Image (tube, rainbow, N blue to C red; front, side, top):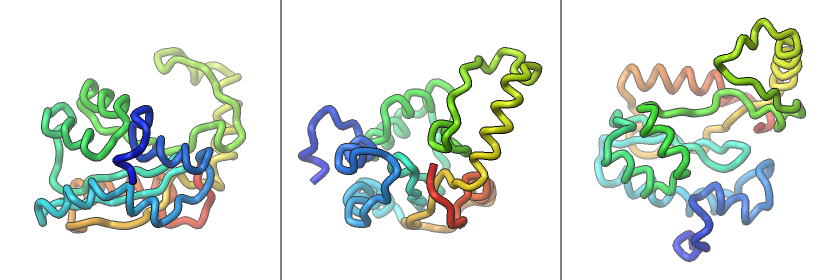
Length: 181
């Protein structure tokens, strides 16, 4: 039971890493069911609520499709805690007033070393970065970032959220039969 996991585990991702010893294995359907119980409870409280559950290389990703949420709102922060969201992710969302989701694989998951460069730098003018980016893009082609596991609750999102969901799914390779990275 997730409630009896050690305090050092902050959420479902930590539990999955503990149980499977890494991030590249497929998550057992039973573990997904246990992990999404708080999300199911949230959706059951209001028939207008809906979410999509994705498997990533490191665990699960939830995309709440209805209703729209304010990332800086205290109610949203409480919801993220109840869903056992990563504390650093929740803080980043609140501070930047934006929800984030990785759309491309982490470089080391596709066999490409990290390229340490600050965003503010003139990285596009750096030939080493341009070469690295070409290697990274080539290595990423055969991978997906996430796979849709299921939709919970109300699957009919508002037009803007539906369009963002479609963009997310296309960018992350949802629906493609590729390994997760």
